[in-house]
Length: 185
Length: 283
Ligand SMILES: Cc1ncc(C[n+]2csc(CCOP(=O)(O)OP(=O)(O)O)c2C)c(N)n1
Ligand code: SF4
Image 1 (cartoon, each protein chain N blue to C red):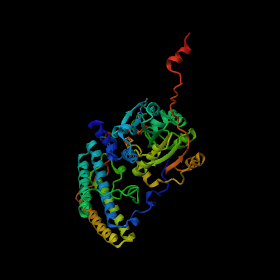
Image 2: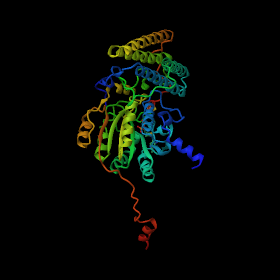
Image 3: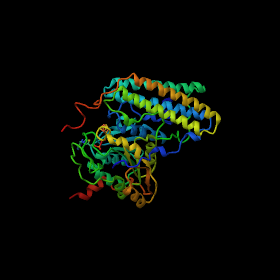
Image 4: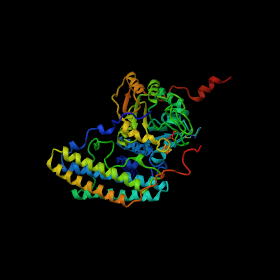
């Protein structure tokens, strides 16, 4: 079976248009950050199990950063517990929240540079998510708050780009394993 | 009622979250394996249905995908290669009160377990069969499976097998499964909903999950771009079969839900006891 058409989840209805209040927007923001944190923690566990400690540590750090962002949402709203999940769950444009890393992007030999590329991609998607909300929100307060969050995500993109500049680029043969998992010829 | 039983009853009524169904074991799958997300589809499904670990059993065979019971908090049985359905049917018939879910791979389920698969569909015992299909034997290092494309060239199948691929969903329909769906591991929420619907539907439910093996089939990372919502959800097996036979394998969602009566163990009191049967063989 070969992948032919690229229709995918992007065809799903955007969540952004339906957000009608600041509370709802912040519930989405909280879920977005929390899901990202949980996924990075899973990534860190997977890499740790394969003894790739450097990348595991980096994912752990990213998980902590996203967890902090989620907590900031609670603080800003004065919420003492996480907001209720809306009936039927959150409706994202793709299959998962825009800042959540794609599981299949991992590789057991990956290097910090690759992990940061994943993080960059996720921050850019979050930026687009809020950007779409700015364009589509019918409520002025939601639009204004979304604009602030779009700017925040732009700042996160910039920070990750800086981080990438300080991180060594992998050699072209980074994925070559002298003792590969496949049966040798 | 004693204080101890009161608190046990109270505990049993507290709704569990998806996280409560995760075990403390960390999966040893290759980083990037699609099966990671399937764990979360299972836990979401169990939580959404209000299941309890003590009333739920996940039975599996052998393969990377079949490791899943270890990563869940429920009863679990990591059984023999290709025989998960037989063990699960026995369990369900002996303990109809349990929710029985079976986890398998395309090698476990369609090669060595292929015959069990057909007859489980035909028998229609009330359980859910989840197959993580990556079109390869992952655990044994990349041999082709029944769903591998005929031209997949690898060290272990130079030039490809040249063999026609198996169509598990059509086989399931033809053999009598009461619920047939296809999911994608990259959509853990949607796949969790499919598993929940499969469990809710009486009879034998079959959920095939496209779950990339990034180690032996790295090109399957592209599946994310190919999957799309299935255009039908029908109770007409002929319509469902037509779609499945002609699609490119990337339509996801519920494809068929029937109305067949599940198979239950007869509990007829008048049924002969073993001692009575023995009498019939007495010389
Ligand atoms: C009776 C028996 N025959 C063969 C094997 C070797 N074996 C273990 S797993 C497996 C195939 C697993 O493939 P699949 O079910 O697709 O699972 P995956 O590892 O891809 O998730 C085979 C052939 C075995 N364990 N037992
Ligand atoms: S070999 Fe393939 S199926 Fe097995 S854990 Fe690795 S990626 Fe997953």
